[in-house]
Length: 203
Ligand code: ADP
Ligand code: 5GP
Image 1 (cartoon, helix red, strand yellow):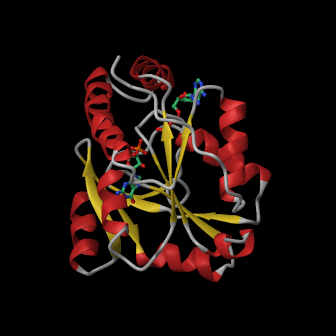
Image 2: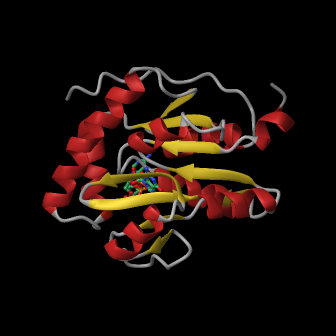
Image 3: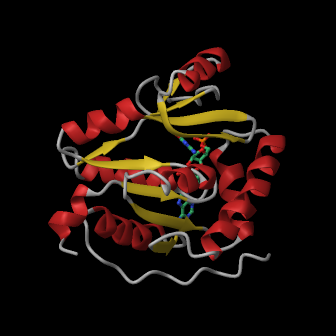
């Protein structure tokens, strides 16, 4: 498929919490301020230091989330680590109408749901080089309690299982950040890349 056609398709990026998705996205949006639009999800989790409402997420109460869900606002939604997350039809429509490639950062339950819609995105999985590296990144980020780190690591195994089923068109192992970013940037720009092999992730 030519890069032009490919660019019309949204890009879904997923991978375990702490693998580096937000880091890659921040760099992409800084390098290409006009090309991409982030699908800002709704979430019931509390904002982390530095996060702004309407930028990383729309931060809402559980009641508001439930109300939006009942009103059919979401293309997909999931409960992750004790909080709700959802992609609204509105946010994807806004990005597409602005003529930008829409990028969604969602977990595996959401990916499964998107697969039964007509969104037809490209699916990219970011893998950690090892579970040990993932654990230390989650801790080093300093945003999660030990209990939250443990929950996120347990969920990581499900994300990895899903990737092992071959659910994603592309896989990139985020070991060296510059190398990962270069591959990620190319996928975002509509180039075809050769995927990395998934590491064993049994450590
Ligand atoms: P995610 O959005 O997938 O949850 P983040 O982007 O918040 O993950 O990254 C988690 C932590 O790992 C951050 O502190 C980030 O700086 C760090 N990190 C990201 N990529 C790498 C890498 N290749 N090597 C080492 N640390 C990394
Ligand atoms: P975090 O709390 O670290 O920002 O995100 C936790 C997980 O929720 C990540 O795996 C992220 O990809 C996922 N996520 C963020 N927004 C959505 C969403 O709208 N839907 C789904 N299904 N997952 C989301």
